[in-house]
Length: 82
Image (cartoon, rainbow, N blue to C red; front, side, top):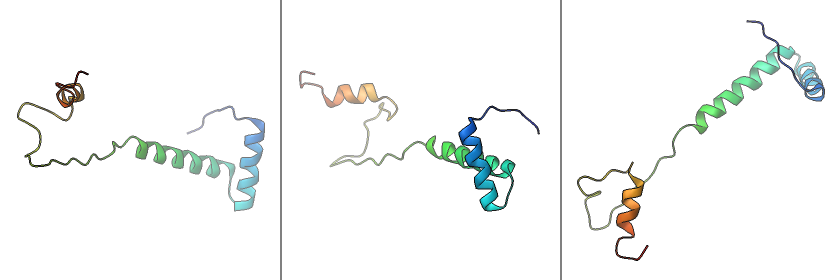
C-alpha cells in the first residue's frame, strides 16, 4: 500500500544512509523500524504479573476482589485513622 508521510529532513537522511550501509531500501528500513516500534508497544501493554502472598491465611476473604483496590486499601488501613 502506498502512503505519504512527512519525515524531518535530518531523520530521512539518517534513514537513507542506514539503508545504504545495509544494502537495502529506505522502504525496508522504515518498515523494520515500524515493526520494531509496534512490537515494543504490544509488549508494554501486557499487564505486569502481580505475585500475591498470604501469611497464615487462605487468600482474600470471600466477597473481595483484587480488582477492587479502593476496598482493599480501606480494609488495610481500617482502624489506623487513615
